[in-house]
Amino acid sequence: MQVDINERIPNNVDLASDRRLLRALESWQPRYLEWWREMGPEGTQSLDVYLRTAISVDAKGWAHFDYVKMPEYRWGIFLAKPEPDRRIAFGAHKGEKAWQEVPGEHRTALRRLIVTQGDTEPASVEQQRHLGRTCPSLYDLRNLFQVNVEEGRHLWAMVYLLHAYFGRDGREEAEAMLERHAGDPDKPRILGAFNEETPDWLSFFMFTFFTDRDGKYQLAALAESGFDPLARSCRFMLTEEAHHMFVGEQGVARVVERACQIMRERRTDDVRAWGGIDLPTIQKYLNFHFSVSLDLFGQELSTNAANYYTAGLKGRFEETRIDDDHRLLDAAYPVAEVDGDGIRMREAPALTAINERLRDDYIRDCAKGVERWNRVIAKHEIPFRLALPHRAFNRRVGTFASVRATPEGRLVSEAEWTRRHGEWLPTEEDRAYVRSLMTGAVTEPGKMANWLAPPATGINGKPVDFEYVRFA
Ligand SMILES: [Fe+2]
Ligand SMILES: [Fe+2]
Image (tube, rainbow, N blue to C red; front, side, top):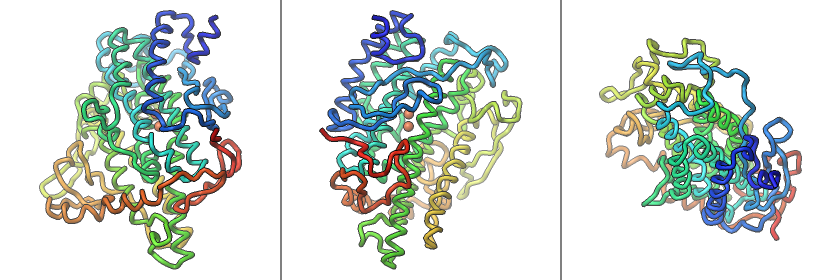
């Protein structure tokens, strides 16, 4: 009996010993499945998909591959192994024992952090729900579904924390996770980027490269939390997140590769004439997704972020590897700000600049990926470089929301912006062109749509032409 119940919600948190919690989660489970059927990947209930499922948290168990029908995916609750005698690494409680229960005075703030993180997970599934119809290969279709089921599991991870540690309001928040929907005018998702559409596969690859990478940095900051169950949840989520960013980086690299092949073989810059996606269009998509993802880090200077840090709830990226006092009461941090008609750096209190520091870590990481894409272009000896736009470009949150800036970071008038933004961001025409390449699904094993190159290798040692998805 007990084993059977455990199997309904696979977990490594000894759910069976807490009947109340188990019952609460078991009553949330059908609501989740209903959401998956209605808002998850469209028209996929009966497909057999070659998926990775976490069946334990150790090196062998967390990447178990098999064919699964997605509604039967074993969404479970997995926390990374506890660190014996773990201590809080930063803030006013630095050096104290990590909390196994929610400290009363931080309850509201912690709940808010968990809800904000949790809300992004189902949002991206909703944003991506129509993409299966236009997949460029079975390999890519499988990767899309892998990302989708794992975002679903990340929702489980946050919902578990809400149910287990936040009583009645936690249960209500868990319900609300399934009631808000990406782009819903009445009940939108909490953060802006998670209400945008993911209308095509180039957007999907950019989203998984840039927006899932925001997820990586948020999770890494929460993985430092003094609230140990949250830290352990996020540490395990990070292992899954790495694959999402791989899908994005490698996806964009293959689109770039294909553009370069066309340019070389056809001796032309007119990549569109041969059904590829030209490098300038790729740059515009990059500009859009990077700038929208930067907004997710919040205000440059934030007392909320400072309070979360001081309270020991949310740390910095790789907090324990940073060589400072981890309290930041007197420390300064350079922050860019608008000054007249230019942008200049100024020293701000490091504590209030926590968001900005995380954004800087993120930008450095993004830049490395862009350099790897540039190596693909350089290999073809094509004189073109992709680049991240300036952080002031196209922002809706923070100090740069009030100005217009070029991708190089030059402030421009509203009139110039209106005249020129089509050079920098995808126009309706660009988007229509990209969509025009993706009118149907490519489902023959090993076959690729014309607008992207095949991947170098398959998944889990399987060949590229493996039947990653089986249609009934
Ligand atoms: Fe996630
Ligand atoms: Fe993700």
